Length: 138
Image (cartoon, rainbow, N blue to C red; front, top):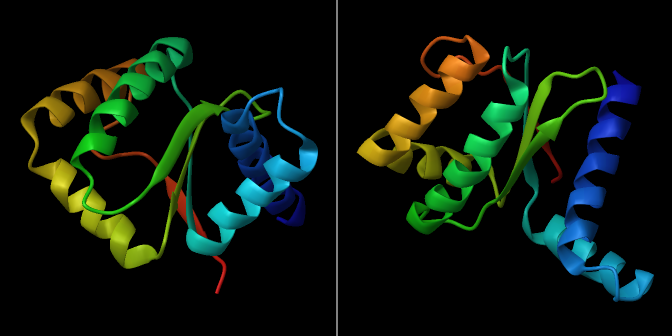
């Protein structure tokens, strides 16, 4: 469990650093990561086996870009592969309530649901069948 949490935290920092760009100093990247972690204290982690993971990740990137325009609250999301080859996504939010509020907006959006159904088909899972866990930094 400790290894899993450590791996997840390392993934989060890697994703945050990758947003900064190669040319920035390490201190600048750490500063930006600290700002995100201080503000966004709720992390949702998704892990699922997925029949066609590469196709799902491509569609998830499109879906994440689309949904970021709809969210009433700030959220950082990104998907990729866990070290064991399963599909993995993270979402960083200020708190659980803002995460849930963002989800409620998506449930009513027709285009988002069309994208989601294609992703679920790629993964061979049921409607909203992704397994998830959360970490809160209070």
